[in-house]
Length: 448
Image 1 (cartoon, helix red, strand yellow):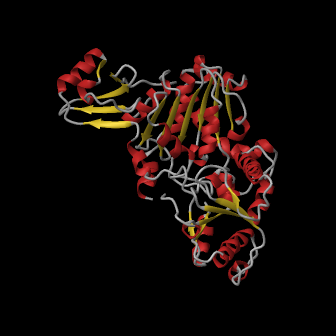
Image 2 (tube, rainbow, N blue to C red):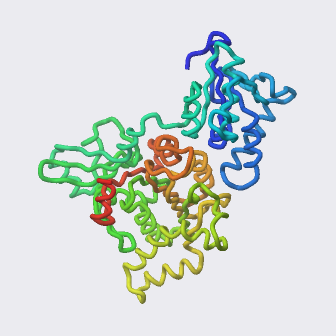
Image 3 (cartoon, rainbow, N blue to C red):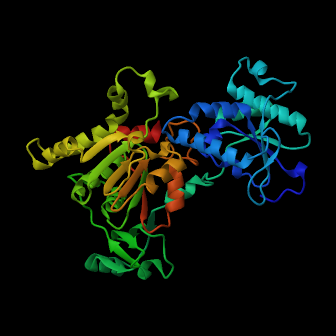
């Protein structure tokens, strides 16, 4: 963003509460332009400051940040933001303007008060561009209906989601069949024979084809080799296609500590992760399988009847279904079947909401996070930053199936992880493309 030459060239960004709850330091990310926080936003943040969820953390951190920046200044006046090349900020108290969003939309609500703040600035700051920044799509649409510029909060957002489609897998066509034969015979070859001298992203998977042969391979960047991948099963779960084979290889590879698996419903993401974890159960103290709770109609689970266990069971049931599917590969008197029951009873295998596991130290843990697309980038970072010695983390999800407000395919935590970690030697990503649940499930994903 080129530097503004004068005050009139500097834009005024009005921040909505959703932006603050997404990233508490968002106020610092508007270059030399000025930032306005409507007083309504501070009032809403006051309701979020208590609790252990990420949104509560973001609210508390923003309040501390604002207090630190303002120091002896009165925040209803323009106050310099800390840092070279930064603009100013202020809190807009009681906007006065000829238009009133409450009257226009026929209802008095906080969103309309925030719109009134933007309308007031348009009148009082003549000649300057006023932009409402919100992660609430409907609020942005209402702003535009009032002739107010509105946009999403873009910092940390993936610019081109389609670029993530090719992360983790490559197809090599028309390769010399002698090289493929050598890979079959020796199980590994010098990567330069196929990839040339230019190194590829670590832990990339390859489908290598000649006219009449093909082989699956894995690129080990540390040794600069291509290693042949054998199809293997984990706790009697057998990969059904190349991508599932790649995913299970990443899950079972001790060199890889962080894995993300992307795919639509029915591609086997969670099933493979859990099967791989059970296969490696002796290498870890515990297996945690968790998912974020996304309340129905965005209402808190307190609205649901029953005690806390009955409230949470519907959210955890898909995870138990995967575990039961694996267990039912065996007969009840088989030791593998009994081992799963024993692990659950001894809490060696724990299925819980993600909120219950936040804050714990994750040492010697195999940690699977399901539905990771419903996490913010900050939540993904928080989980990974808690990893101790001998911990492996698997994130599974579909970046296009967002169930939480204020996140989309470009701003959710799973997309953020894939984009930021794709070149790291401890990380592997694979996209599962073919549904293996049933032909009927495939019909739904492809046609409906």
